[in-house]
Structure formats: structure tokens, C-alpha cells
Length: 373
Image (cartoon, rainbow, N blue to C red; front, side, top):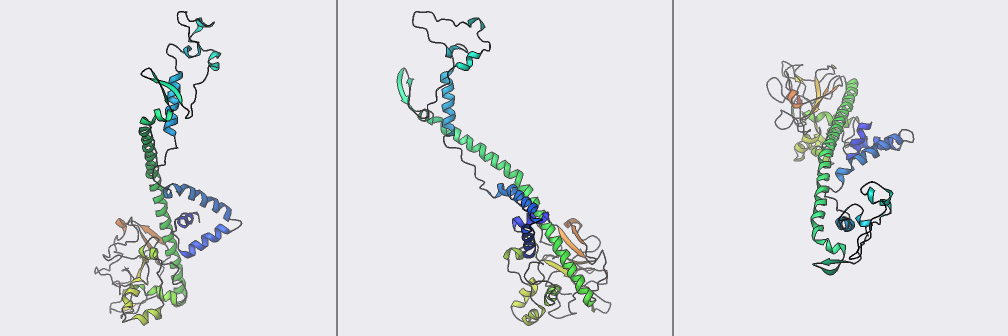
């Protein structure tokens, strides 16, 4: 359940899963801990949605810093640690030594009574320039060096923000990828359960006709919609982040709607999208060339659905990192990298190298929605 919180927070869940998460968050018993986790995730992800421009330095920071340095220099002694606390001797008279003169340089409590350097807070004070008195504010006297310090502050803040982005964004990307992977596996598992229920009623999986315009790999989806086993527009057959998912307008037609569209300009578009982002088994043909109904043999090695192939029929474009999700007849969902996709049996081509029905019962072929067996 907590894996879904990341997907819910970034909007990667489909409508049913989002409603389920919202219901659990609102639950008076289990919802409290989930709401805490959701808030923690929201706070952790907030740096990447905030403005990434360098933060402005506090107003007057450089001026106040220079004023403090100037005040320290003004109060600094010229001839020893205690010079600033000693009264100046009158001209022609020797300076009186304090009573603790023999211990000069050692630590004593006298330093606690020394007056602090004055703070001017923008008031005019007298200084000398070439021996002449001058009246200037600390802000004006420091104005010619405030810009470099302000620029340095901005550079430091910008570097800090950049470092935070470099550290946070890869971690967030991993969270997004994990959430999408979890959602895809869960969706395929749910479709697999629906196919098992269909097979229990019909003694076969949804199977396309042997030939004709309706003989399409994606016809399984309208078949399930027509029997009210899946919802036409709930996003069940969409991969998180895909083009169809982002558009938000995908809807699975019924079998009757597909039949009615045959021969119209809308037919090709309909059959190309009715299976969503997942491909379906094209079955196999017997030695006489007849398409055999797809039987539920519950084989753990025989795929029945997977991420739909792209136009090359070598890989799927659903995942940007080349991850492929495969649903097997026994209901197991396996996630494999592109380098391990085909192995001994090409996932998207039969033994003759075509994206069509298999040459025998063990020749599994996953086709896209528009492919014909």
C-alpha cells in the first residue's frame, strides 16, 4: 500500500487505484499512519517542486557584515590587548600603568568590563579622510564592496541549490520508476485474474476469429468490456506515463462498436488503441493453418500478455529504461530488462520471424492491438 503513496503523490495512479488510496487515507483507523507517511513523502519531495533559482540574500546582510568588521577594527588596540581599555595620556606626561601591569597579557576578569565597540545602525558618525573630518554612514562607506559580497552570497546559495538538485532528483526519479513498475505489475496481475475468470466461464481465453477485419490481437479488451469484466475508461490497460495515459481520453470500445466501425475511417484508429498499452497473445495455428482457440493451460513459461511491441516488433516503448513486464498463463508477472527479453523464443515474433500466430502450441507470440493472427 505504501508503494502506492508515491504514485498517488505524483499522479501516476489510475482512477480506481487513486480512489482506493483516498478511501484508505480517509479511514479512521488505518488512515492516520498513511496520512503521516504521505505528508513525510510530500515534505521530502518539496525541494524539487520549489523554485530552483538561488534564494535572495537577506536585505542588508553584506552592509551589516562590513559594519561589524569596521566597528571591530575601530575598537582594536594598536599596542597590546589592554590598550583599548586604558585612558590616553596627556601630552608631555607619561602614561600611568595599571595596577596589574606585571601580569599584562595574562587572562583576567578585566576584559569583561571593557566597553563594546559602538554600533551605528545607520546613524552618521565622524571619521577622517586625509586628516579632514568626514560624515558618512556605514552603508555609504561600505557601498563600494557590498556588490561583490552580495554576488558571492548568491553564488554560494546557487551552488547549494544545485547540489541539492543533483542529490535529490536522481532519488526522486528512482521513486517514480519504482511506482510505475509497481503499478504496471499490479495492472497486469489484475487483468490476468480477469482472464482466468473469463476462461473459467468459457473454457478458453478471449480469442480472435480466424480471419477478417475483426481478427485482431486487441479484441480481447472489447470482449472483456462487453461482458462487463473490465471498465471501458478506468485506465486498466494503460501503462503509467504513456502517451495514451497522459492524454486521458482512452476508452475501450465494445465488440459491437468495433463491428459497427468496420469499413469506416475510424476503424483503424479504434483497433490500434482498443488494447491499450499492452499486447495480447496471438495464439497459434494447427497444421491445417486454422487458428486454435486460446486454451487456459496454466503454463508458467507461456506468456499471454506483455508490454505491447513498438513498430519494430523488437521491444516495447512503454518504459524509458527498457524494462518489460510479462504476464504468464499461470498469473505470474515477470519484469525483465530488454537484454533478456527474447531468449530462446522471440516474444514478439513466431518461429518464421513474423508477428503473427505461433507455428505450434509452444510458439508464443505477443502482438499489438492491431496485429492480425
